[in-house]
Length: 408
Image (cartoon, rainbow, N blue to C red; front, side):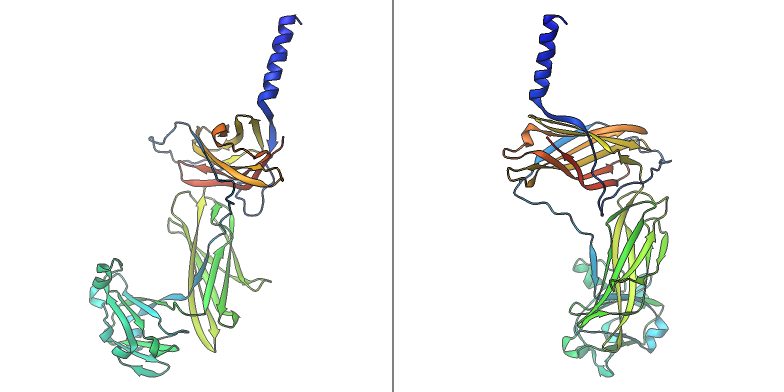
């Protein structure tokens, strides 16, 4: 080696060492409970719109390291209400339901919004625990469809809403309307009731072909109630429905596993869960319906296991391999944590990057530049809250609560 070549080699090596704290391939951490990880890929048959943005986008901004970030738990619905459909002939004779607290709100709407079948409070006769009440005594507030619309509540034509008077108490309510005709949807809501049905899914996002676990529990004023009956249905945005069968688990709650179709599609529209149950409270049967929802995406791409990391004085970059089954615009985002002198980790920056990828193997790089690197925090770093999104089809494809550990 000549003297000039030796000097050049030494200069390059010195420059690389001074400017880079770490540059290597790093495996993603094992997926944790709650992470969304595709086990298969699906190639989309339908073509994307021609105007889908293809230009690359990269940006990052600083976070306050003193502010902790917390993952949002899946939503759990708590219901003190139920819905039922009543035939007009049955309503003429009288329809009975149980309330557990005074002040229940009742909404009655003709099926199809027929004005001809509309009811008014003067058309109703009310009995509570066998006591006949006149309208002035039974109701404290009422409104018809026009009054509701004027107040900004856009219910269907013919809708009647009223609140049972607190002074009337609670118990077995019997409503009858001699003028009833056709069919009606009745909604009863007890805002002050201690009897509630809870319903939740084990995740708020799923992939086509996944299994989503639903959990429900009936609670009363004195503790958990055992349902006399409990069932449900899951409805997709395109109108498909899946019946739900619950079984009691060892934890005392009722669970159901719902297998999603392999061809479930992506999009903003949610899959809805409607659960209905009846339980005895104080010797009387009480009905409750609960609703929740979750998003479903078709797995058109996924992250690879080996990331390429470059940690320099000027920032940190993480290049993530992406395997795409379908062409599209994919986005990766993540939060970078740094270590304080005491070893504690603190979030200091979030980065986003989007690229158009063709089918096959590609990559997307998250760049945390010098402008978001704080004083007092350094390696080891952790990349958390990592997600891969299909921007063209509006689907979330993969999430990792803890994705990478970046040592010195």
